[in-house]
Image (cartoon, rainbow, N blue to C red):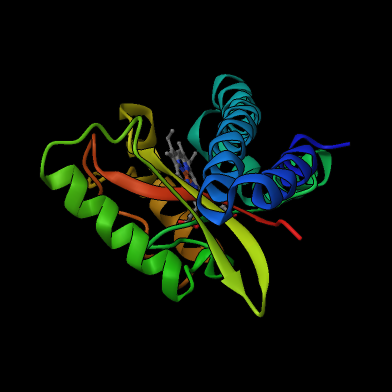
Length: 193
Ligand code: HEC
């Protein structure tokens, strides 16, 4: 049984015993711990592929790996943990990574929080919403732009990389970033009942 499912059951019991607020608190707390674990695994898997390609074939090879492996890696981690998992950005490269309305609002808020000086590394958001009488757990974790990200997301992208990006992503919006900015976010969604 997945942790989130266990948490749902514990949450439901708490709901009966002590009422809805505590139930949500318990669900959310455990949900967030689980979600953090998932994002850690996801980022580790993505970065290890990226690093391997960068070392073996430089940025062009790494770009190819991002292009062909980012989505399958996302799908695999989602399947392993039985959650809905994605990456989104206000300036997305892949058209599939465009945020929906609530995700856009959170990403904008992340930018505001970063501008106020909050550490992007630890920045996250979580809530439990009720949709048609069903509870849904939502989690977003900000992805900071590190120095290594600038090769493909920065202001001075090498001409060969630029060219390849333009051919793979004609509507690419994901350039012009500076180190420390919010590049995007990992989104985890889980229906709780
Ligand atoms: C070698 C080039 C390269 C490097 C380095 C790179 N990226 Fe990307 N990034 C890409 C490509 C290509 C995509 C589109 C992948 C796809 O098609 O799913 C992408 C997509 C993303 C997305 C999904 C949203 C979107 O714009 O489509 C995020 C978030 C992201 N990158 C963050 C980062 C971060 C953070 C780093 C540094 C730790 C980084 N990237 C380093 C090439 C790169």
